[in-house]
Image (tube, rainbow, N blue to C red; front, side, top):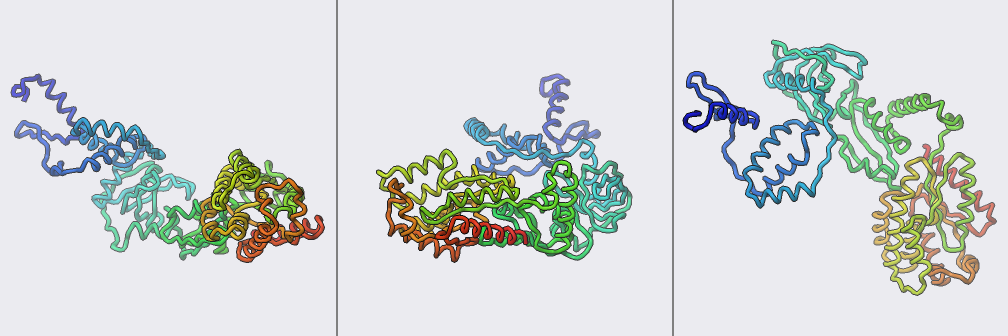
Length: 514
């Protein structure tokens, strides 16, 4: 070959090594004294569109070998071959796309020794040979030895698992490959039962750990702050999502046991509440008690007996109803009860919100259409939710807000003539399912409220008594259908009003604790 090609033997052997490194399956025929490539190792040429070729190469470029994804090395070699065959203008296009796209995946935690176990399992599963494994089990709390019939290898959540019948468990189990410490292929073989399917097997477990016993029908309620995050993920094949009026969801699922799903529920803390079965309620409560014991040195003694549930309360009503006074009094009372309180006003509180507030209330020379007003209020509220309200609730704080979405429905809907469903639809997008646990609606006749405002009226107050009357009517009509609204007679003495508000808050807390 060297003589025919006019090069040295060293060059020939170097080229052969380069071919092997590129994944070319070279074989040496000792009879014919020649190297050859088996026909079965290569597919017939095929045609790819430029878009198909670029998509394969971009994915291989951007994923990177550090992810540890299965078959990545072979895919990367194929992409390199494609890239080398591209015309220059397509290579430039590939460079431009790669420069503007970045894909981040969590790296696979697959130790080097697990690669050997993985390859042994691939061979054993393919030839239907049993294996004997020594396995470090986090559930049995020890290293176990078992004879395993490796039915299937499964790549899930950035790790390899083997599913098969275990002799020690006398059942089909799932084993994580990187926890296999030793593995030996046995001579005896196995047959996969005809009724075994991976999908059917995993359907009976929350993720990877089937448990003995009858199936469990589970219902968990997630509050509005986390409801969207839970609902947008397919956690389990049997799951059903039911949205509630307050933005919470009831999550239904059927699994074979409660142990593993309990860990998932606990991850949502006080934002998740098990509605059924009682056995899961008891298990979660037991976990919670043990968690509290672990941190007993750091938790105030008052919290060891009674936890303080955060609340989101909005105050509304026509101008002059006394919202600020009552909000301040309620703040003092809640702090005495152990709540950490965050105050905000809508629009306002954030930098963007305060600028919108100034535009809406103090720029009297502006003739704003009701639709413009509504959209400005909504924009300020979106910023308020993301910057103040949602983070405060997530950190366990109680939020008291001067006005919220109900105000737009009353002011721009009922009083200004905008379509109520349009206002509600925009509001739904704006608040992103963050709705008050309770709205305190201070009801005061407009002929009593208007004189309280004095002479220095803002844009909304300056619209007059008739406008204020329509706003009040809107509030009262909406209170009949709006969830969790407490209508308080604001013609009473300040102390009497405050007592009624505290009673409404206490009742709502009891209701939420059920």
